Image (cartoon, rainbow, N blue to C red; front, side, top):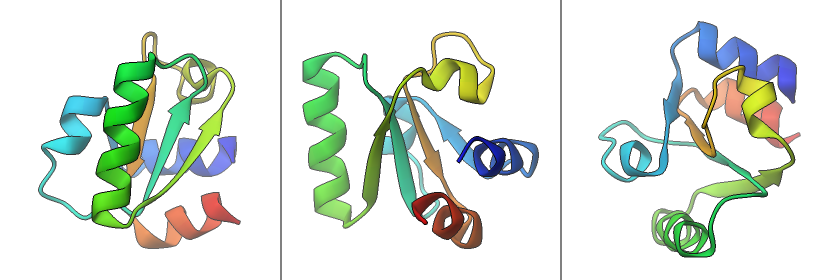
Length: 87
């Protein structure tokens, strides 16, 4: 999964942050959520994903996977990369 997240970041096919994901006009195919996300934000992103029919996953230590400090949620906008992350 780390390899494909890195590929998506280099391809600029990643949306960082809850507010950016919710406000994004591009189609998001998968959302990756850090385990340490606060309960209110977790509820908000889960509801958004359910409404938009987006698959989401929880991971441990997302910051180290994306190599950015403070990142708790990312959305992948590339369908092929998202399929690789899901599998």
